[in-house]
Structure formats: C-alpha cells, structure tokens
Image (cartoon, rainbow, N blue to C red):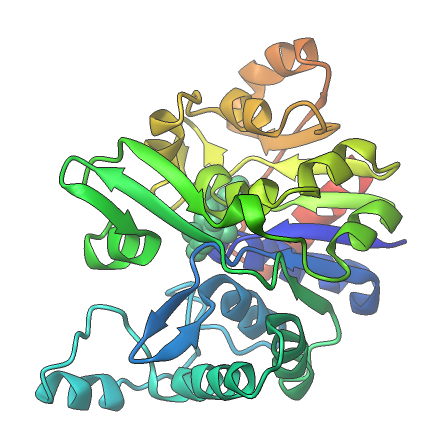
Length: 306
Ligand code: GDP
C-alpha cells in the first residue's frame, strides 16, 4: 500500500511516527509544508521538514514537539551576547542541520535534494518531499501590519490579532518533483492533524496540488486537529476564525472540501458526525489525542482503514 501524507510539524510528526510503525516506511511519501521556512542568522531553516525528519529519526524533542532531544542552546546565548536577535530558538545540534542545508542550497542543490540527503543521513527510510522548491512564505496581517509566520508564531507567541493570512509566492510556485506523482499514485492520502491554515494551507496553495487531490483515485483521509472546540496546540483556532472557518471538525472539512473523502474526528466531537455526513464525507470518530506511541499507532491504523 502506498501512502502520501500532507504534513505540517508537531501534530503531523506524531501521526507519521504511527504510520511508519504500521506500514513499510518506504511506501510512505511525506509532502511537507515549507510556508513557514525562514532565514535565521543567514541560515535557511525549514521548521516543519525538520520536525518531521527528526521525529522519524527518533531524535525529536517529544516534550517540546520541535528541535532535537537533549539539545543545548549555547550558540544562541553567545549570539545574544553579540547583540543578535535570539527570539528564534536554534539549538546547538539543530544548527548543524541548518548549516548543512544552507551550504547545499548555496552550492546549487534543490531543497528536495538536501531534504532527502538530511533524511538519509539521519537514517530515515521514508521519502520526505518539500511541497515546492520555489519560495512560498506564509504571512499574517495584524492591526500593526504584516508579519512573517515565524515573527507571528515564535516572536509574538501568536498573541496578536490576525486579520488575514497569505502565502506569498504561492501563485508562481511549482510543486516539487514527486509531489503530484505521490498524490496520484497513492492508495491513501493522509491529511495530517496539522494547522489547516498555516501548515496544510500553504501546500494546497501550490498550483496543481488541490487539483491533484481532487483527481486522485486514492482515498483522501484527514484527521481533525480541532478537538472539543479548540486546537490541541498552537494557534489553529484563531487562524481558522480569521479565515471564516468554524473551529470544529466541520470547519476542517470545509477547508478540505471538495476532495476530502473521510475525516477522523475525536470521540468527544461525535455530535458532528451527522453534519459531516451531510457534507458528503465519511466521519470516523476515534481517540485522536496522540499522547503516547500506542495512541499514535492506533490512530494510524484508523486512518489507513477509514
Ligand atoms: P506546527 O507547524 O508545528 O504548528 O505543526 P502542525 O500544524 O502539524 O501541528 C499543529 C496542529 O496539530 C494543531 O492544530 C494541533 O491542534 C494539532 N495537534 C497536535 N497534536 C495533536 C494530537 O495529538 N491530535 C490531534 N487530533 N491534533 C493534534
């Protein structure tokens, strides 16, 4: 069975770990969000690709949901002593990833190539693809003007009002090699429980991806990141509201209409099943809080059979 997964960072990483435990990891292709890529100290940082890569390599800091386990931040401290900006938390060993990536990109490698190389060197068997090799940058408009996604999410800790979200560069971006093929040739496409606006949204904004999802013969199955009226973590609720989407599995389904075939939602949201059926998709209640490995695996099984 071939599976393609559209993935953001923290929420996606848990389900992807589950998927690789219940299927041959080599038959999974991940299409990762690069809308929140950024430059820090001159280095190209791809937070979502790294979160997914570290998770599948067994190196993710599971408590934080990003970065490497057992990380230290001495370089960050030293940069602070030099008066550099330090609001973006780059760990010492994580820095190696960004130096490696930036050096390869400057030498002319594509993000596709360097992402594959990083995965290979970290012992990850799953194919991890960036959604595009062209720059797409998620930006949010606040009452004080536009912020990059990382300025909003990390520097401002998502504590500012969001009036609008855009994916700068998306209209000119091409899907990275392998992305459309993975969606077309999969038996199941999984839309991970990721932020619909800032993790999945940028992937869908790349021309051709949404059409590919509508055309694929694969079953397209999403997992709701909204549980009991709120995001499990992060600013998905605020951003969905800013987009005019209901903060519920119905809002998630609306964001993914018309190509979503099934939505796995939490048992506590079972009241939405009838409404989701009315939208023409299968609604599958399950235990969707992945608080341990057993639950990641159990949810992965539900997704593959929904
Ligand atoms: P980010 O780029 O790090 O924000 O990563 P994602 O977009 O992949 O993950 C954030 C989203 O995942 C949030 O909307 C959370 O509500 C959702 N999420 C995180 N953990 C879980 C979980 O265990 N279960 C479900 N259903 N959603 C989760």
